[in-house]
Amino acid sequence: MRVSPVGFAFDEEEEVLTEARRSAEVTHSHPEGIKGAQATALAVLLARKGCGKADIKREIQSRFGYDLERSLDDIRPAYSFDVTCQGSVPEAIIAFLESTSYEDAIRNAISLGGDSDTQACIAGGIAQAHYGTLPVAIVDLVRIILPEDLWAIAEAFSRRFGIEIPGPAV
Image (cartoon, rainbow, N blue to C red; front, top):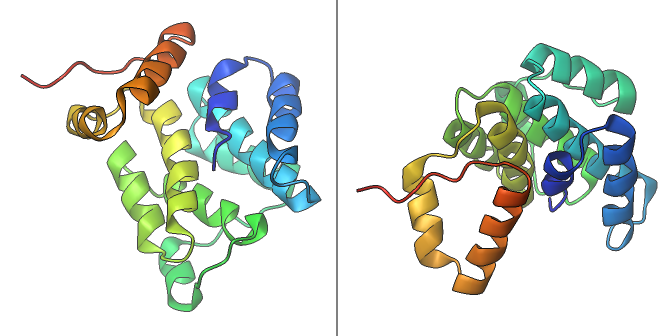
């Protein structure tokens, strides 16, 4: 859930996979945890580089073996809280794949229930890379809620890696 910045910070697939591994090993040293982090970061990179949803889906399925053929409607009836990467990363990616906007991706992920904060982080990271600029209303709310020091870090990261943060709504 914390690996999306890796897909923004590095430009080559192998770099992203290596850095995603390094970032995951601290808290998710299990091979499935590392796989989930790598799949997420790679999906962000691919989205950021302009790959379409079909290409992202194909690459993540073939490289990591995740079943991304299910729909959210297929998943919802039997889905329950699952903190494992294999039980949450594919679902989060599907939430992105079925989305029509950044906000829709987050809503899709949350609609599954379960470990929804993790799934929303994953789907949201990929969606931001795919759809581009975040909705002003969401950014304005984050500006209000996030402590100043954390907002400064987000702004610095965004400037460094060329991520547009919309200004406050007037």
